[in-house]
Image (tube, rainbow over all chains, first blue to last red):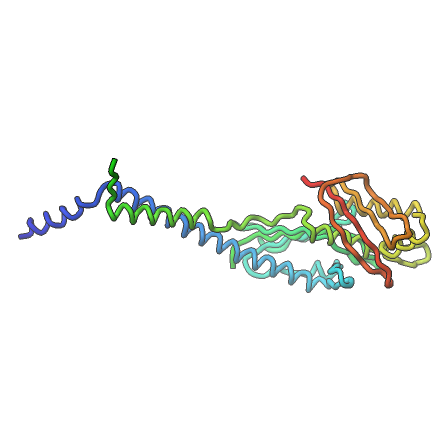
Length: 144
Length: 141
């Protein structure tokens, strides 16, 4: 009885061609890879959104204001130095004026799988004068 | 020649094709592009025009206002030309550029840099009620 049942099960397996088994295995592998890739991209996106949030928070906290209807921003160096990152992210901020580094801050651990960089042209407020400056904002860390 | 296909094979092929399409078609989130996109060029021009120049005696004036005055008078003081060139070099380096400032139809445009072609941008600003136009030609790398 048991042998008969086993033969019946085996014969059903024999009906499936090796090609079908191979193709199914391949498609399963591709689907799993696609799922991993999607998950990785999603994590990257979450990190990027968090890093952009930090950038916006920096602009708000560093005493940046609009110079009119052109979206020009000026940074107050004293407030910039007080900025602290949140979460599992390290932040590096550089402000350069005519090749001279006016500010170079490193806060939090600058390690992790993801990185976000942004370079912005803006004004640096210094002793009553506004100078054109380049702000480099780098965030490195893990997705929150 | 007659080709026969098992339903299981057909299903497997369909699955594999779908998975491949999903994998290939999903948008890839690349790293931030820091090239000279129009917004970045605008940021640079704005940073230049709203930056200030300080004169002996403590008076300050924005570069935009100083350029408008120079356009009206038809001459650019040498120190203003040098300062604007230096700030433009800083903002657009290492790209080659040409920046033309103009206002109204009567005044002669002011030109900085000698690069022609590449990517062109046009911006308009208003200083004390007067319009200042800027044409930027930037090298594309």
